[in-house]
Image (tube, rainbow, N blue to C red):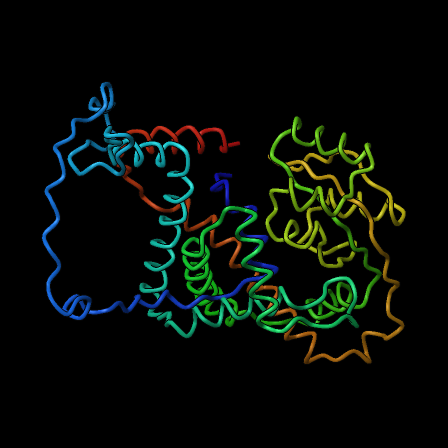
Length: 359
C-alpha cells in the first residue's frame, strides 16, 4: 500500500492529539507614512554584484536564478535559486505530500457539499491541546491548563523541527478529513455486537506501553544499544522515535486491550507477553520497527455488559470509528489523486519513494 512517509507518524500524532489552529493573523505594521515625520535621506544604490562562479547553471527541472541574491557574503552574492533548490531536495517532498493531501481532502469535502470553517479548524487545534493536556498513564493526575498544553506543544514542535505553519496546515487537513469521516460514519448502523466489542475494549484487561518507532533495522539496533547501556527509555523515545505522538509523551501510548483494532496484532501480542518493566526485541511491522517496554497492566472491570453505560459506549464507538475512517481516508485520498509534478527533482523523489512503498 502506498502511503506518504509522514502519514504513519502524523496520523498517529493526530489520532492521539488532533487539534486545530486558527490561521495566522496578518501582522499589522506601522503605516509607512508614519515611520518618519519627514522622509529619510535616500540610500546609496547597492553595487552591482555578480553571482558566484558555478552557481548560475541550474540542472534540468530546478528553479532558475532570475531574482535578487538571498544574501551577500563578503561581497559575494548567494542566489535565491540555490537555497530554493536545496530546500526542495531536502524537504520539498514532505511538504508537497502534505499539500497534495490537503488539496484532495478539500476537493472531496466540496464534492460532498461539506464546508470546513475556521471554527472547525480551531476546534481541531483545541482538541489536540486537550488530548495533549490529559494525563495518559494516571487518570488522577492533574490535567494541564491550555497555556501549559500550548507550551508543551511548542516545545515538541521545536524539538521535531516542525514549523507552526506545518502544524496549522495539518490541522486544516484533519478538519477536512474529520468532516468527511463524520458524514460517512453517521450513516453506520450500530449493532449490539458492535457495542459488545466496544465494551470488551473499554472494560477488558489492558496494558500500557512505551514504544520507540524507527524506520530501519540499523536505527532499531542503535536504540537497543542505548537501552542496553542503561539509557532512559523515555529520553531515548523523545530523541529517536519517529512516531510523533508517542515521542512527545516519552514513548507512552494509551492503554489497549488484546483485540484493540487501533493497535497492530504484532504489538498487541508482544505487549501482553511482557512483564512490567521488560523491553522487547525490535519488532518489525511493515516498513517500521518498534521497541516497546511494558509500563502497566490494568485488570478487567467487574462491571458486566448488561450494566455498562450503553450511551457512553455508543459515543466512544462512534468517535473511534471516525478516527479510524480519518486514517483510512488519508491513504485513500492520497492514492486516488492524479498528480502531475512539474519540478523534475520532486517528480524523481516522488516516483522513487512511492515505488519503494508499493508492496
